[in-house]
Image 1 (cartoon, rainbow, N blue to C red):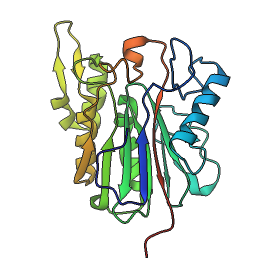
Image 2: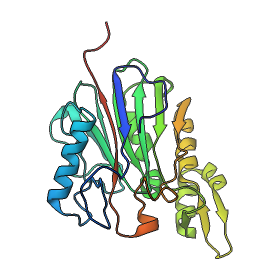
Image 3: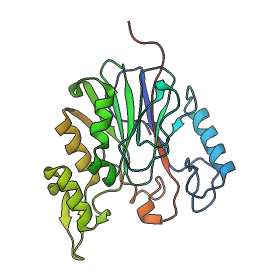
Length: 244
C-alpha cells in the first residue's frame, strides 16, 4: 500500500501487507523479518519478491531494532549495530522499518532533501525516538510531512499502569490516549501518542494512522493477536536526481 500524503514526486514510499510471499504458517506469507524464527530461505525469497515488485533501487537497509533511540545515517556507511530509525539524503538508499503492531513513521522534507523511517513502540516513544529522528534530519520540523503506517488500534492495545506512567512521564499530554478498562489496566492509542509527539516537535502535516494490524488478520501481521508472527515493512527512499 502507498502512503496517502502529498510528498514530493522524488519521494517514494510503501508499506507491505502479509500476502504474496512464500513463508509457511505462522508466518504466512510475505514475512520480511529474519529474527522471528521463519525459514531463512523463505525470508530471502520474500525480500527478493519485494525488491522486484516495488522496483526498489537497492536492497533495503534492515536495521536491528531494539526499541531504543539510535538513528542510523545510511549515507555514512554501515548503520549502527542497533537502531530504530534511519535516514538518507541520497538517491537509491532505502530506509526500512519492520513492525507487527508498533507504529512505523515515515518523514519527508518538502524539498525532498531528506527522508526517514522510524519504529515507534511505547518504549521508543517514551525514550524519544521521534525527537531523535527529527533532530538528526537537520531541517525545520515545519518543513516535514509524516505518515503513520498500520499499527495496533486502541480497541486492542491493552497495557499496564507502568506503560501509562512511562508515557506520561515523557509527555503529560499522553494521558488523553489511555482509557481505563474493567480489568484495572488501560487501552492505549499508540498512533494518537505518535501524532501528539510529532505535533509537539513542530510538525504540522501528519497523515495515516488509520489501519489496525490486530483487526486486519488477512492483511497484516500482529504480534498481539498471534504471538508468533511475521513482520511487514514500511519503506521510504529518494528516486532520481534532485530537482533543479
